[in-house]
Length: 408
Ligand code: ZN
Ligand code: ZN
Image 1 (spheres, rainbow, N blue to C red):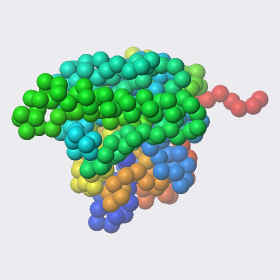
Image 2 (image 1 turned 90 degrees about the vertical axis):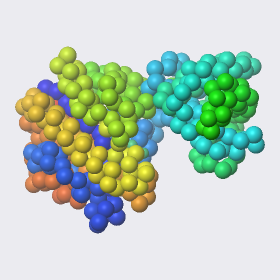
Image 3 (image 1 turned 180 degrees about the vertical axis):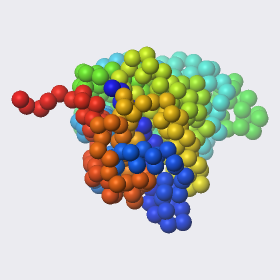
Image 4 (image 1 turned 45 degrees about the horizontal axis):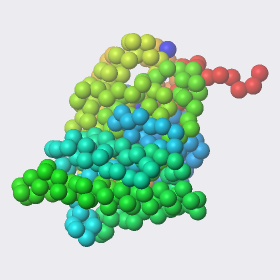
């Protein structure tokens, strides 16, 4: 028996999305509808009703962990996801190369999506000397990267330096708790950000960009401070070895943090242009090579919804449907159980994650089919799973007969 979990990020929507329908309802999805027809359907509150999930906390919850116990922030997943080594006590951040004026007012949070000189910038940032802490920076794609502060007596209980908007000054980082270590870390981060400007502003690559009328990457903005979380590895929790297929660093990092093999296949970008079939092929290879479980993550629908772009979200859902069609052609549902859902809703008007539940379907030979024939938020209301909170993996693994008995 094999198990496959597919998460379409930001899948769910509202009737206000597109002509009185959600994007999922508006999309042509024959393969997802087939899954609904042969499977059991329902609504999933990724964490629990009334909680607006982040993608990271939602994934942890769907995998069967309690995010309120294990979640320490986003930065550590970003660092792990781009291949950094994280040690106990390290403070990890998501880092953006950005552009500020000489008054530290943010002009662009992404430094014109800089895509050149990233090695030069990385080297300059890693050369920044701080008293008794080490700075480790790694750039990933364009303006994105992760940063680790390594040293004694540090805390992740601090605010973000990234103001999350332009035209305002870089936010002064503050301690979120009364511990000395939090105040000390906040001071270190503030000092580091000042130094990053001093070091980056006159870098040859930035001089060149300014001559060409492009925005210089003259500051590092940090957010999502976190430490290495204490998480029971997936294979210890379930006794199952698994792989995760994703394009985005955050998702690869979550997979690594729980001990799944993380794979970014060729053509997977974590963006709207990602090659979805290549992801399914990578998943099939992992199953062929002996893994019992694979997780596939598709990001694009969420990004389209953050941009309030209903048509692109519908198109992306249709591409996901084709990838699911390819999967269904290549797996035997007598030997595999498939769960398909989202990690939260991202309605078009709102443009951000909402607390609305998402549809879920599970199919395979041990599943009792219900009367639902279409995969959508509305149709799922009538499904046999009812309304569930998180913990999709235990439910999926239950159908595979992989769960330990509770009691005698
Ligand atoms: Zn998400
Ligand atoms: Zn999102």
